[in-house]
Length: 169
Image (cartoon, rainbow, N blue to C red):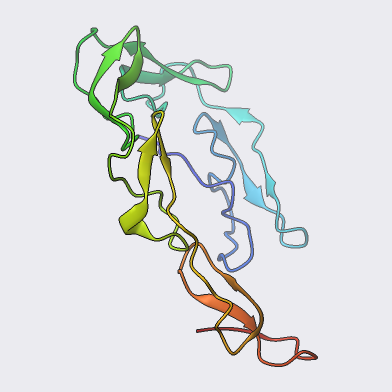
């Protein structure tokens, strides 16, 4: 079975792949490659044959197959099947007409917005979406122009006003 690739597979810090990889997130094409000069993903033009196994990313479908036209699709599973809509602000998720969804939890229900620059203990659901708590204060940092990096939660900035290198604390 094929799995979806990453559109950022060719970006900074990644290992540039050689040969055929799936960098365009289309599991039903073959021949993708990373352009070593531009670091951009070049999508493959060869289509996998209809019936090739794939994953369409929909929790409410089964029997996913390539269509032969470059798309991956499955058959909706029966309504009422338990699924996960990956939304921490819904509960009792289930499939309805091939779509996974749940019931919105009450506002102020604790959640995690996934941003390490917000105070997680104050993240809360608001109208079905997780809203981040107050932002981390980097103003007390000894760095110049410090900003919080959402992926790490660290304050990053320059060591001096004229410096070019960025450090994180």
